[in-house]
Length: 373
Figure (cartoon, rainbow, N blue to C red):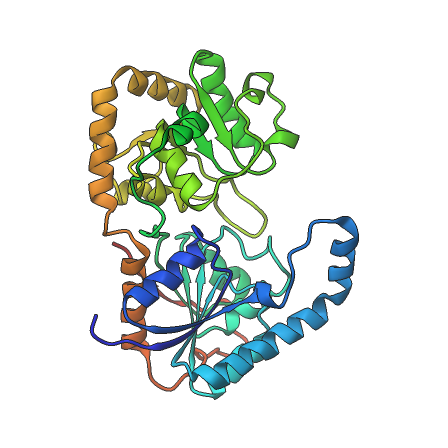
């Protein structure tokens, strides 16, 4: 792409996150990106007393954060305002950006708009366009939120983080596993991974993620639970050090018509050089060839059987991991995802305005463009 833009980006760009991948990708493409992190205004707290205090102060924090964004807009004079998820955005702030001639976009990477802060459902319909990483939200967001313009740009990977890293002896001692899963606990994930532990008790299994230590009920899994999550380079190194990496996605949550079909791990594992064993669905099979660039399973019995097979066939496993890496890199990077987003902007830019809403017709068909690799 030859054209670059002035962009104001609202996100929490933690190293290894989708928000940081978006920020780095936009900058590598030559755009002038001003980053506004809501954590600079709204603190993250852990103790009960501070959580109560923050809840009481949150309306003032949110107002201050939105004033901060307006001030940043005055300094940066952006052509594009882009939020990654868009926590704590107020609809009136988005309307003000449009009045100033700035196009407003939301890149939404989560399963539901209703399981985070209460401000997201009110703000999402105000963007000029929403880019969702979940194909089922092409239906959900228009029907449940009144979004009028939406398209699908999948997750990606950040090449600064997710690549085949050289491992030290310490890395191997810390992360090496026959099978690893990196992600938060749910009952469905526990049931699936439990099938591996029961069928293959000698397999070295490691589980990294939130909530496992407190919620895991299966005794056969407790020895596999590390008790902590992994982010960034540690995540990429654990992928590299494991023979098989599980791609088990989240089930249906409030406000969503489907569970996850793909997530960041669908791209971060192959980019890091790992062997991906993913829950089977038609969407992921449009990005990788099953049995050649990744493996798939459906249900606990097939999962355990695939783990047994690929542990017994290391050459086949390594060949699939290498092919998955070639497919993923660089085609599925955040640089490429942001090229798609900016191509949309180049085609759609003009007077910044909200897509028209027909009075009395809340179920009107949205303007949807599916953007895929």
